[in-house]
Image 1 (cartoon, rainbow, N blue to C red):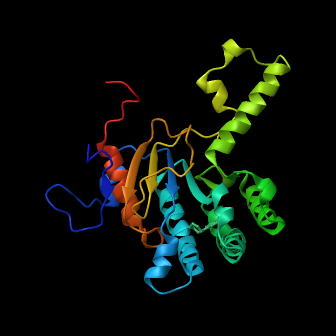
Image 2 (spheres, protein in one colour; image 1 turned 180 degrees about the horizontal axis):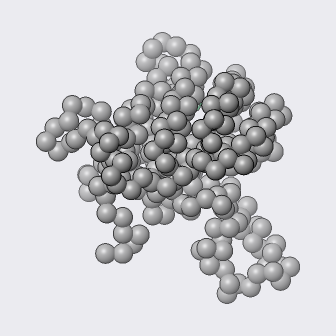
Length: 259
Ligand SMILES: CCc1cc(N2CCCCCC2)n2ncc(-c3ccc(F)cc3)c2n1
């Protein structure tokens, strides 16, 4: 049971471990949808006696690097947990800083994303986002809507339980209008009431910084997802760590509940 969650360790490979290269993984299945809980930004800054915002800023650079590699590898969708509904509890100065990061990221990297045929999307409750944040994100969504490459899906002010209860409310409304009969309600139908309607469920979930929990992230969608945890802090997460996660994903035999 102790091996239930195999952590991705960046230590010297022992007989049990192996460090993989990009070439190693190109022969196997590339996960069509990877989701990442980008944890460890505050601790990264604390370890360097820097303000927490420095960790968030460094983490933003990792977003660019990992997006670029995922696009090169042919990943279909990359969902990144950038801001949860619980993050509003953080100090105002930190929330205000975080809400400026989408603009900074897009101002700097949108041309590159367009060049790489990346399509930007967001999922979450947009109502509470500051206007300046929403304007920047909606512009990027418009400018990349026709792109057919990697779908870069940011979870912004996202919480899975809120997503699920909002989906139930919409489904009940449709049932009251006679558009849906109770006996027609299936997992597939309910999935269309969620924010990930047009995306397949994640095949691989990565969480950095050693935390082993879901933190109200994609609770419905992760039912059959392979989990890969690493002690590496998100700002220190490198291309080799993504390759290691994909390689170990390829080693696992996914059964979707079967034998
Ligand atoms: C609004 C919170 C937030 C935090 C954040 N961090 C801080 C926390 C996690 C580590 C990554 C850096 N990033 N990084 C990119 C974005 C981003 C979001 C939407 C978009 F369309 C383009 C970029 C971002 N957004």
